[in-house]
Image 1 (cartoon, rainbow over the protein chains, first blue to last red):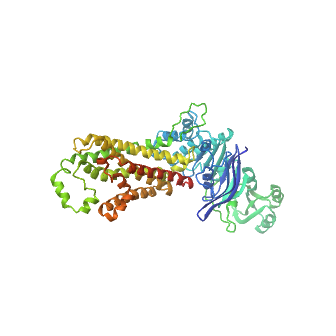
Image 2: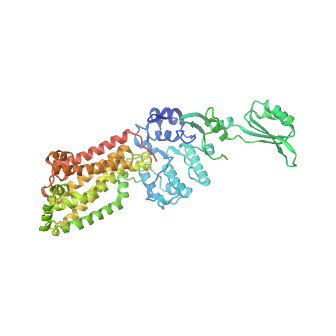
Length: 319
Length: 279
């Protein structure tokens, strides 16, 4: 069996409100598959269906070769799950809590819990209610990873983690992939998916907008172009405006380091670089910047509601 | 229900009833608190029987009270030892305390756990929903059994000095019916939580059944026209035949047990049918 997860026509309604409108995707074994989308897009709903926490209204799901609803519960011992809204019992220590989850989960290798706790820097002997949100999240990550499951389903795994711990988490994900484990993770932060995932699905309003490799997504991404020239604005617009790969051209007059006025053109660039290079000698630029394609821009474009042009995402800037 | 597993090397120890054990470990402090409360109630009331229940003044006061009030409070037999223990501990304050205990435990078992978001993570592990309901219901049963065993011990110690005038067998019969009644209230709470997914649904179901059972018993006592209410009052099933005086009413005991079992079975079915909600 090549796919850890196969989903066909998955739909979910709560009463009259349909939150997933029939989505299809598959996650090959050994891959890191990321789902991004704004809050409310349906990421958590998909994950809960995979774990048989909620039941689909329509469609078929296969997880590790079995349908979650009818599968032997032992199949969930081979899955590690981190809920998006992690709730942990407060009046017990992390160690006891993880011991309990080890009881109802796959076998945990001796010393594995302590090793993970040390890497993530969480004190297992403190009561869970005395831990910060980030440290609680670390307990959640440990219980998902501790039995080295075949499949990890992680809903917004880095929420509450500081940047250092986010890096440590990414290392855990990469180690899991290197060990042949499959990782299915969601985020509303693009940079996280960019660094962790091989393939990314973009979920918007209960539909998959696109599924693509991270590399392919980057190719569709636009670059930001900024040129300063002594040519008059009309001439600059004439030269640049004819290029097919150029969009959203803005012209303004700024002052260079010596205080003399120059024409600055800013635009988005999605065409071949050669086209741009051809026109540059005639522009005679005094300054030029073509920034690296921004994955976030590419994703935001896919998030945009048809018609409004407004992004519906709130998230950090990608690095 | 046991957790058989894919042991690698077989060296890893796994708890046999993990959810039951966890529930009981979590409940150990509250169990002690409830035991202390029951001890206080019993030590407060029972030793007073020679001075109050049996005294002539009390008899006269009972005669002076309206018959309806005496019936409503189940104080009709208060002059006898079994009647006094029944009216004070088994029928009133003890019933109240143990019902609160069982209803809150039952409501928290599924509904409260789900409402707080904990159930989502539990059922994402290698357990079935049936197992979750059954192990947590078993934890409720254990709590009721442990507390009532303690109540029985206290009763056996106090009944002599308090001149209650019933033997150990009748004491055990009274405590058994008490325990079955409390378990029934707790089972309805568990069912309410399993259907509604929130603690308040369980509290409403358990407390509702307890209050209605008590009220139907009291109303049935009042008036022959309302005696049919006894038939639908778990409180009457448990206490209608005065177990401290007459021993266990076996059909009533089986009825109480059967209804509790039905509640648990319905809770299993209810939890299987629906989505589990997170926070």
